[in-house]
Length: 562
Image (cartoon, rainbow, N blue to C red):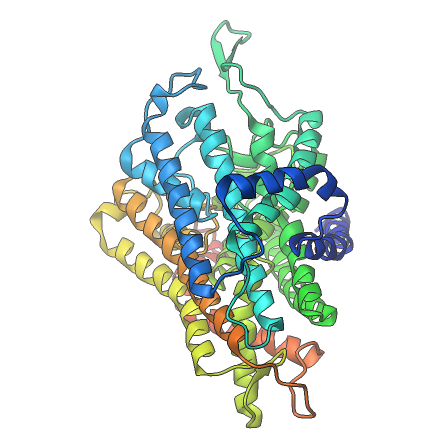
């Protein structure tokens, strides 16, 4: 193990910890209608959007209305992306004259980008035109991220309101998030990426002649703008098939560091946005501490396992790696992208050690609450917090309370649904794939590695992550349909319970704290919360992980490869 690697890890963590609170407190003001200096520039545009669409930003919604607006908005987004794909050969900005995308693949891709998953069963530069990449996928990168933040805002409001029937205005939340947070930050990162050498072009692919006289096609396109929002919005879908291992997406060590920072920055900052909104910054630091502790444990285990495999299999272990970036950078990226629902990669996950793959899987299996996606990581963690408060209340014989709100049967039932539904999709989908000849015919590897690849595909889709261990031909109808349904259930099967809980909490009365109130900003609570997350994840997925990465790790020690 190299000292420089640990310095790199520490530098990354320190940078994130310094920037997250500053950005989070600023976003709390912006998203509550106090945009500051950006308001002078963007406020006229915001007001114009409201006038053109008939939105009344001050008219707040009941949670059911908020949910229906969200579902309708995302449904229209899905339809638009689907139609763009199946008609792309007739549309402009297609200099390569790419054909229409087949129906089920178009369905899978439209679901993927609408749900912030960005699972890709295709290679972008050879499948989708410039128009589809920009007007379809890139637009959804903004809007799906804004949707996740909007749900988190609604949940935060519900905790500070007393006997209220409303939780905010979905249209105003999405508009402000896109205009004041996602667009400016994406523009800034895009400019840096272009300066560093990332491609941003509408020209047809370039053709170069090699030394031996043959021709080589060099793909171009509007890359930098999509890379910026794919990282900031925890989307992860690459313009190129090799994602951020491609030099046109990730050209230098500086862009590699900045893209990794962008993956985590908004999810980490939103913890402090939440703390500012509920008026309890100490509670936000407790949540940040739990997430960071689990992240550090995952990085340590993954790095140790990958370093150990390199010692056992020198040379072979570098297959699937990008040589421009060292092992530490690749391992760090893989843990970050699975702890957050990002899914972008700068090295092939299937080339890493079995225990590294186990860390990646576990990060996703627990609902990606180790920071998680923009908005969805925070409201996913809230489900665990509510469950922890409920368990702790039962242990001491008190009615559970959280931030002055009574946690009753209604809340826990919905929280349990939000936690268990994605888990059920992962396990049942994996079991079905192991029994289906159509699914088994789609993968290359056998034994525990083949099982891990199947398990990874369903986990990544259900967790709305989008990364892949590879080894599976996911462009088949079986996986296109099955994983598409998993993405929908993984996204909206959590959003519906969260908004139901938000509506219920907003209607409840606030209870003043007393001597028997459980403090949720203490070290004790943070340890109990961590234990609950680990126990729930372990009990649910330990058998499946044992059949895949754990067995492969034990066999690797004997020199057995799959």
